[in-house]
Length: 285
Image (cartoon, rainbow, N blue to C red; front, side):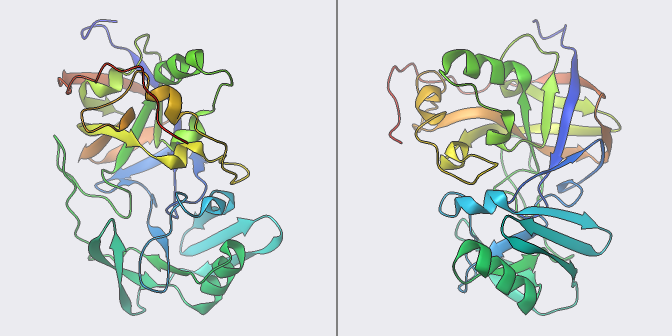
């Protein structure tokens, strides 16, 4: 597919209200400066303010959040669901995200106890404060709530099909926790080169390739660790200069708007990413 013949469509929209927890499928979504509505607006932290991630807490994947107005509902196997009113006035407490200091609004003792019971260790839940002022980098700077970096992670069906062609057991796209799944592109990894994406009434700007971690080895239904795939296979054809492996791309929000499943995805400019390393090696699992 040439750069002048790109026709894509939004196949899925997914937001993740609580960082590290299950996603919520959407048919329509508001796109704000920090990403899809409610995306990573909440974060589970330990007693010291460090965020808890599926990298060390894979059972986060089994917690299914939903947001309805000012109410957050959490569900998980083997425990009664919990509903809380979101508190925007409680004290701010220091939190850390990849070593950088931010603040969060503590959501109280009840949800802290619920999360601690599910995850088997002391937890608290914080909500991103309205005054949160975070700058994300990459080719297109932007902002996000508690996402790892840029506001939007996009993955194409063509990229997933190319990976699954190389795997003994195909994987669902949920392993990669995308916000936007794009269909209709014949060429895999076109998201690496898409500089600007016009979708619905919004626009996204390419920030960087998405470098993948051990979260991709977690079964997003059971919360179980599954072994070295897909990292082992990605390492044979998707290594970047620093030795990491790339799959999907991260985008900043250039123009807020509204998106919907079925919207056309138009690439309006292109970028030239750093070349991938040629390797036949693998990563350990």
